[in-house]
Length: 88
Image (tube, rainbow, N blue to C red; front, side, top):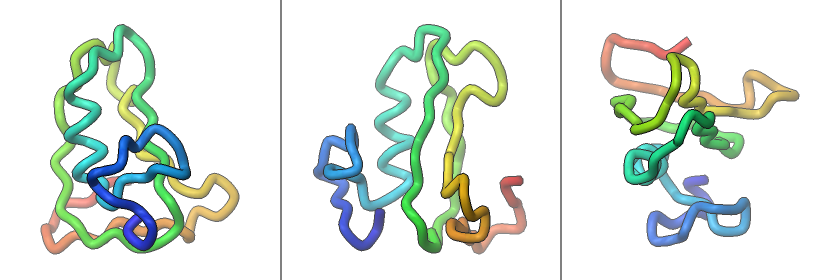
């Protein structure tokens, strides 16, 4: 959450959000998912960032690292990148 987050927060609740997706991805690489899904919740807004999706220890299969936006309004979260690659 770029407007209320801080990359010095713990990121474990909506009251302590990270400011950037990059920080969330960095933190998720420090854990062993042990076959569980790594789900990163994104607050509504536009994120202007180039993302590199990391390898996460313990991710069982493709699709188990999730960047989850607003499930009620798919247009509420936008990830904008200056690179030619996109995430669907």
